Length: 163
Image (cartoon, rainbow, N blue to C red):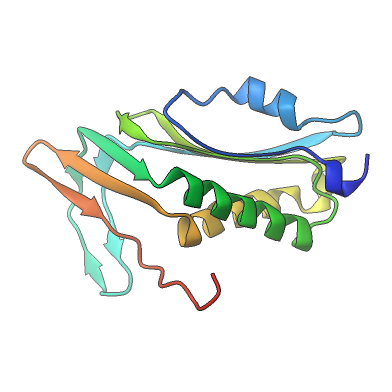
């Protein structure tokens, strides 16, 4: 299989993330390793505002609401997948999936999976790059609902020209 035909899944969904189905879709006959990152809704949250040096006290999270402009978000996810392939040409399959809608604690919200022939190919680093880059450039917005109020959670990344 040529690298240009390796499986790539980039999607925004309201549906539950099905890891087994995604792995089946991004696995080919030479695949021997999969590195997977899954982000989840925390029931207790503490954040540090790194840019401002602010520490927030831990608080309960009732649920999160995620929103996205799907066409743009999926195009940026494809950009992330393309960047992974440029940096790690041995990566075979890539899945980048972000859930939107109302999500409760202990619910997976995002999944990044990269497959390769072997674990020592950079597949772990590729998956880590995928989630970090998704957080930087993919337009997904998160509103946190707590017992005593709600607030939009803003990232600290400022896009550079061309991103």
